[in-house]
Length: 310
Image (tube, rainbow, N blue to C red; front, side):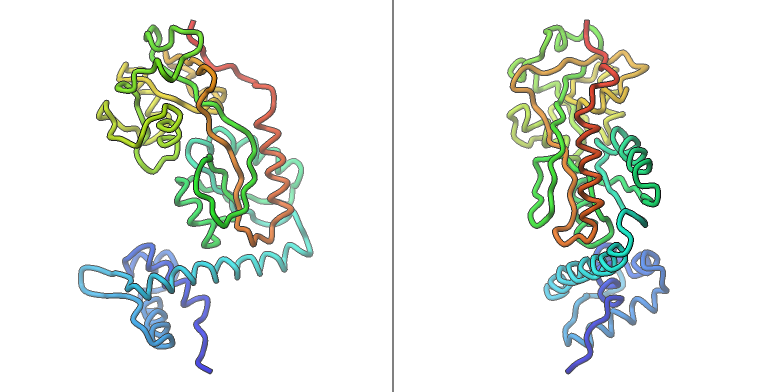
């Protein structure tokens, strides 16, 4: 029987597929470039197939290389769960938990969630990471994250998903803007040509378009924001209107600005907040505990009222 590839070799290949640069992949793997290159060459020899195309300017994965990377991610994820399952069986609710969250959730929910979890489980430590949904789920599947907080709808095929609560989208506009004069804004009444969006890659963009019954399109304003903070600043300058999550508004995102908010009329556009994990996760106790805390926080009486248009 031929020697089997090692997990280390597989991790080198996965990292190279992400970076497509030997130097960067080696740095991310905390080894020298020669060590990483040698490990991948040995992996190719063991498998009897070329996994990587190399020239002076480019690094590309071959078709079989892409397939091996996909399977390697699954193997590395299962290996991570195996190690965790063994250690957690002896001491649940302890150790380091790697939690990801998307940018439109992280600053508004993670502080209270982590604080409450630490109070209940003082031996549980957190490593927090803020990423887009696609990147968070990629890191979840390859074992770099244990759990992630995301917004639904989104394709979560093959993952363990726990819906937590709904988060309505509110209309924001500069003070005095006609868009916020009605007590409750109607999706049908919105001037879609003035609608500001986050750049592609942020799920709030698609949730905004879906909530307004719009197909994916080029931004009519010609302006796209990289964050909700930038979106608020552009609205304050009168560049357009936007839809923002209620959790962000109640966290004080509009504080210190002249931007005002209006709830949307029924049926109000909304997104679902969910905690996701690998279906094979060994940390099911932590998953259920965090889901319960997050759901409770989402249902708590609102502590801060958004700045509503007069």
